[in-house]
Length: 257
Image (cartoon, rainbow, N blue to C red; front, side, top):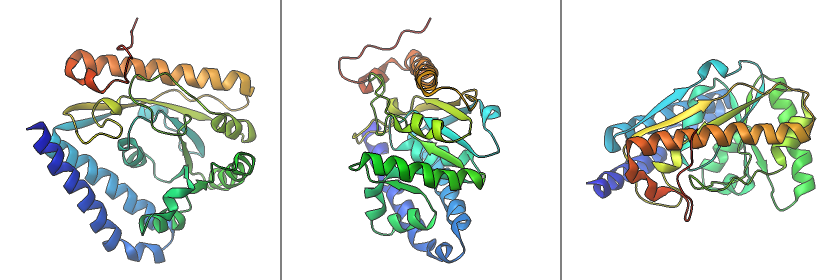
């Protein structure tokens, strides 16, 4: 049954995306906010499909910590799930993403027209300069800047591997940073076909105020995200120990005091 539900959901998910990409083409002529609204619909419809087909619900905690002015939102990245789930919670946003995504047929054009920040990761110094310049414009317009501090998806329970990009962005801009913890990798595991029932939790943590030294900011960010994510993973495993199959290899379930 788990395999069948996963199969039906994966088909429905990509069919839904393909239909929206085609039907949403007029939004490209009405400005970036029209595309943002389409992204909101994609996110909510995908969450609905996952709940109806797979029995996978979502709980958003700490929404009172979300800021209305321009800010940095630094999120744990365990699966593709949070890329569409997170955007449902912000009126306007910009993702920092790898440039290769803009090369995808049609989908990439939406990213470009929506003014998302595409980074060439092969050119580190140029990428950091571009990141700061583009983010400054977005923050001035009151957008939320989504960044995944580890730069790529990491399995649930994997040791953290934070990169300098988020610290460079924070140090260059006078903007608060909202850490985000989650446990999505247990339910939508990276590079796997199966989708597991239960409740995925995204938790928005208290914002880190602007102006901290970078050497103080990055450890504080990592500690906040990792401790909260470990707690959310432990909660999910307590309800369904079978989800441990999706923990990183050779990684035991996190301990929670």
